[in-house]
Length: 129
Image 1 (cartoon, rainbow, N blue to C red):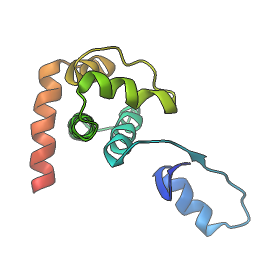
Image 2: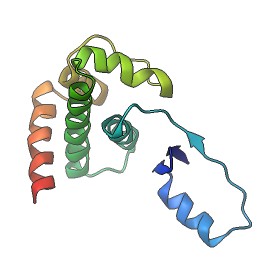
Image 3: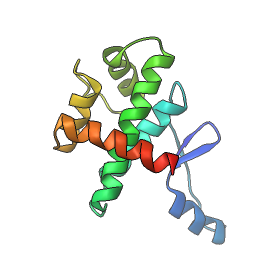
């Protein structure tokens, strides 16, 4: 299970099981993020690694990751290149190059840049609904 401060960012199902079985010892792994958007982007990257996602779930997570990384870049008053450098260092994600956010996310997930941008529109629509 991974935590950021007092927030559980990964391992919700395991945590629920462990709450029912207090005799089982467990530990957590703290992660460092500069802000909420970086945490959301990490969660999306982590979940996109799952094999059992429906196409709609994958599309939503792609769009959510893109939106979170763009927001984080604005918070830093940097751009997608400075965000890529900052977002990877502390939690084992050091494969960011100097690419645009949409290009990098597309490459990481084997889709086109246009698919990432369409996913962003899809995500915003779902969130509004």
